[in-house]
Length: 100
Image (cartoon, rainbow, N blue to C red):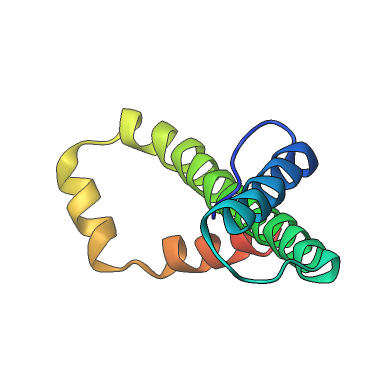
C-alpha cells in the first residue's frame, strides 16, 4: 500500500494496523509483531524515498521554468528553433541543477 498524507508516521501506522486487522479478520495467516513492524518501516521508508524523488523532480521543473521563462519572453520563436538544434547548454545546466 502507498502511504500518502500529511504525516508519514501516522499514516504508516494506520496502514500497518489496517493490514494487520484485515489479515486477522479475513485470512487464517498468523500475525507477528515483527512482521507488522517491518511492514510499517518499509511503508515509511518507501514514502520517504518517493517524497525525495518527487521533490527533486519538482524542484528541477521549477528551476527549468524560471531559467527558460525570461528567455522565452525576450526572443522570437525562430531563435527557439535555433537553440533547440544545439541543446548542449540546456542539457548541461539541467544536469547541474539536478545535482543540487
